[in-house]
Amino acid sequence: MSTSNLNNILFYHWQEITQPFNVDLVIANQIFADLILAYSQPHRYYHTLQHIHSVLTTIDMLKMYVEDLSTVKLAVWFHDLVYDTHAKNNEEKSAEYAGEMLKKLALNYNKIEKIQQLILATKNHQADDIDSQVLLDADLGIFAADKIQYQEYVQAIRQEYAWVADVEYIKGRRMILTKFLQRPSIYFTPLMLESSEELARLNIQAELDINN
View 1 (cartoon, one colour):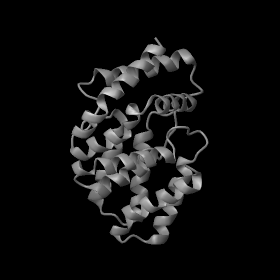
View 2: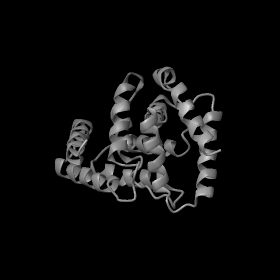
View 3: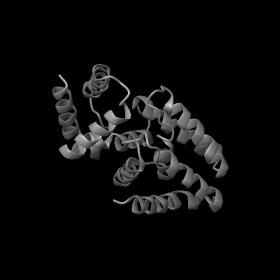
């Protein structure tokens, strides 16, 4: 998909999410432009606009489980707003900036607070409510991609951590992936458990085996 087509599709999604709140269109359009710039930064290879599009698409597939769809979708837009592989507080910074931007849209405090909580849930991928579960399942949907897409994902993540030596990167990556395999389930929602759990585990195990 071309960049212009993707941006047009995402702009439609953004309007669909924000317009029901009767937001100031000028401010909403400026925030959209800021989001596009953030996710188009040259150091991003996976955490890009394509990732946002993929997560939003999966959210639509899982929307039968969602309690507050607009809140979950807004959280998608902001969950990787700050992405610095040298930092340990990307989710906290993303939540902070989300709060600042959403205040400009005059969203109410409870809505903003819920969005921030959803963003923070993506740090350790732990969920204590259904909306968090849906967001996390969508965010981790890439684990269940076909082999080619999964390899592209693996390579893109490695590029984002190009500054890390191979030995250290493999060690860190192995630790993260092993934690997912040790969970009772990677996914939370019934649909993702049925359709994606087995393939996700196969993909992760295959990646671990390659780097064994």
